[in-house]
Image (tube, rainbow, N blue to C red; front, side, top):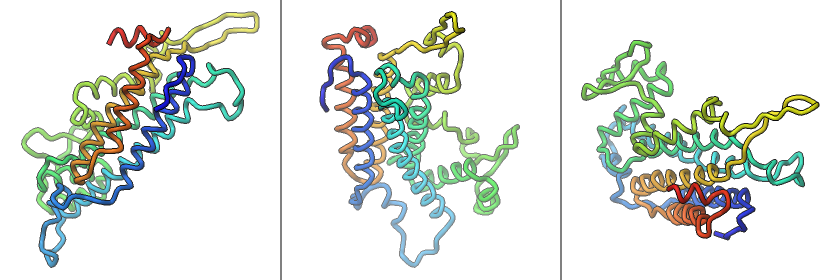
Length: 290
């Protein structure tokens, strides 16, 4: 990845997200799979065996995980465009290219999509657990189409106080939520990122006020934003790290190499962290604090 001068942080972010997007898309175009990979295990049934609802649910989960993974690439594309030239004023100053809080929308969408893909394409669960995850996803997605069939198939479908259906299992089930999947796939770090990015996305004044300015002039009030290059670099590093985790899960599920995702994530994160050596005048304090 090309090292850019310290003043071209926006260019560095564009290159970073483009590289991550291209690697993610390329990895999902691979068709070769190991014959002993987890995705083959639940298909290991006689050809003349009848198709059961469990088979349908596992197939539904796998296809849904692949769709969520494809969405990751699309949101990465949006992040790259967020820092590119303004089509209405391509020759404008560089500071007009900063999206401020807007970048956290696609970043959170990436976290959600990667978590959903990482949960559904998890290499560890056995076929029964895969079917259960497919059932939980089906109720979360469109309960009206699935609830009766799941009950008929023997799933214990219950409703919470808000009348939301869910599959009861092992005495601890509850309605599916994306925040729970983020925690499951990315642990506490993912939960912290999800909360922080959500506050930016939903315009929490506690989050956005310290990054805003108010100027009073003769022609009125002017509300602006403080350019925090360090936070946008930190955002890109976090995205790369989350993609690596999700990419490793999917590679293991299908029996494929994690490349080129692994190489791109390590290269992008390493390049961005290297901004601290020598310290960037703005980025330095953030990386030293790490």
